[in-house]
Image 1 (cartoon, each protein chain N blue to C red):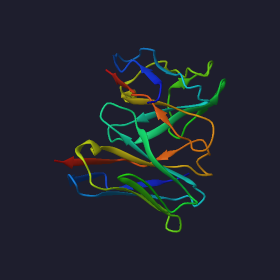
Image 2: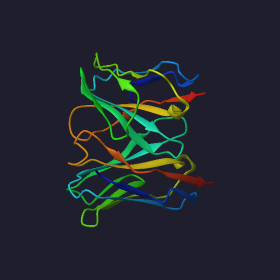
Image 3: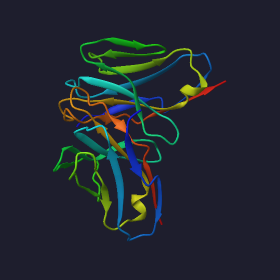
Image 4: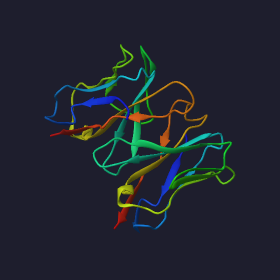
Length: 114
Length: 113
């Protein structure tokens, strides 16, 4: 089945710095790559996603880039703020996972210090 | 904000008890999911449903069972709880169309003593 690796597992940055989280996947047929943010005591929430026909997508301070050849995609957060502190998950949907299911990465705990 | 509700938020129960975790959504979504989240944060799909009377096992084997008699309701049942079932259980739903875009509930933290 699909294997999704996510790095780093923890990331500490100063407010205003940028943060980058990277995921790699194994199934070349995968075609949908969302990112979820989980705040303490809550369920994960979709923050941005990208499809395989697009290389980059931006939404204000967050962006996702996709390299299909290398089978990896990354989340970029610029000008980080304390409220960005949370656990971030990448996910993958592909032919081998079933088109209505997602396989999640192992999560990255981001801490933004004021 | 998504309208998907899980009850109870916290449950502490003794070994051998039967429990049902409730999940309801008011968005009319056809697809629903149960994920188990371990202390290391990883999310594991344990059950999913494409619609009424449809249930499938997920990628992680689970002793729990689910039912989908109504579109809005997707309860999870453990017939005999054990300490190894201690975990966070997250319910999610997804509308028709491309994605899936999952809307998660706030979860049930289950502790089996």
